[in-house]
Length: 481
Image (tube, rainbow, N blue to C red):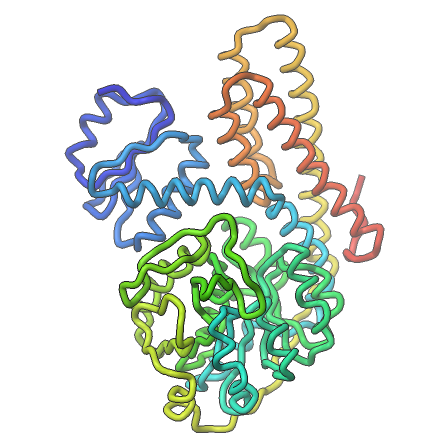
């Protein structure tokens, strides 16, 4: 059997490795799932990993290695399907501008770090104090009236857009967790930014929330490229990273666990639709609606993002040994591994003490820490941009002379590969890897050149954002020329 070039093989039987090696395409990689370790430069062993984590790792390596085809054995066909979904999701994320938007927020959030509260000092601060994590699913309507009476007996953690329904009912949560980098989240929260609530914000979350919120701020990095996280930890002094999965409620769970809270009680976490309603105050199913099997075996309608969150909870909750997870949503898809009771029952059983909120330690950051690195990043983006413009011009000239298409395609891929050595690459790695992935898969040279143009524009955007922020005085430095 022959295989196409740039194929990812997802297998569980190591005996297939010899066959693949003997008949391999020029570029390929083998992902060996759930079996013994095999040391070979073309083999990645995925041992002791959940289904979700395995799919994420394969997706990431496929994009990094520019693999555009998949082949799996019978036992891994569901995994192959999941990987394909993640690759498509990565493309939507990259093409929507979310990566560039997140970086724009990062540059503009940095000035707000000095004087904000330290998430590191909050570790274990509420040990064995119950937390209620409030999501904005349709079932929140059943229990939202109870929450005002419970906020003195539990840490009330609001998730993203759930703050609106709470505030409209005069309920003030202790914490509001925000991860979304997009302007729509700012618009959703804008009427409620006068809140004394403590905003737990990703460094990539909408910068206008940082600028306008009246309450205290806690910043945290989310899962990003390791080198970028190393930068953020070094220059912000923030060491605690809270994973950001498909739903902000997953980050809120990690936040509650970081605080030491227990039990962690969910309300409004439907992860599916009720009566064609997506949220407590919204209706209508999105275009990416799907169905999956709920915790009780029912088939429920949901979105691909919420299904991914459900899969994450299913795998993760069983690993939590020192805290009880309670689902008091009273509807929705349920949470495998959680205790399912009503909110009234959870309150009677677990909420027995009055809580107090202590003062958090403030963060400090000096201009001299960030200035050299930001200058380096700005100059790196500038160098990438100059290379992109010059390279595109050169390729177009070669096309006009009728040069070999296959040879030009290879040069385009080599050019994308060359960016990996530059200082700013890690910050735009997801976008750049996706653009190269598309360039590999594209038929014809014109689409490949369009991708080069898009890359050039994205790099110019980063340069402009850094310089614009500096001119506006929102960053503590002026870029060196």
